Image (cartoon, rainbow, N blue to C red; front, side):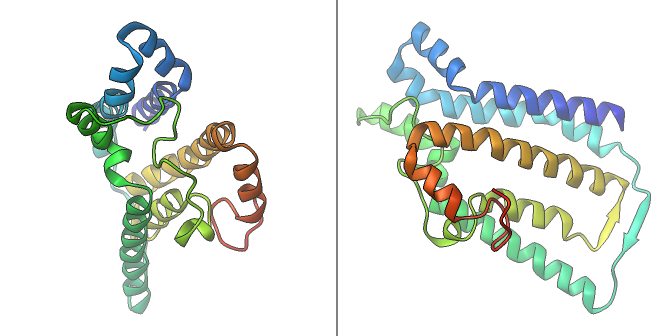
Length: 206
């Protein structure tokens, strides 16, 4: 348990630091702004995936001691919620340009000689998205990822640990992310924050 929590904490910390504008600017000063704008996000994504492998290992060796089991019609309901959460998260990602999220768009634009986004532009989109699910909650990707993790009809120690760890990470990550979005979009994002809840519609946690 301790090894998983420690590895997850280190991964989350490094993941946040490598997403910082300070590190991007440091990299741009050494390799150039255009190559950094083109390949930083792709490298960041690959680095995040590779460094998560040890976390997965320590999670996988956690005990699978059963905690609770949902049966009958409730089990089907949990599965339905989990499936709907996956679809909603996928839709939210597409709404904000999935290829750009992974860094592929930037790399392809560089190879093709097309203009690149500013280095300090948000990772997910060229513009502030406030329609669709983003008109109901500011972080639908986080909301539906958490819904998927908790909509588990057969919860054990291993799955509960992952659900708790990522829930904390998403909450803290949303605060960090909104500071960057506020710096990027200014008053437009401040107004959006006041109008739309963070995770759950009609729940006024700002």
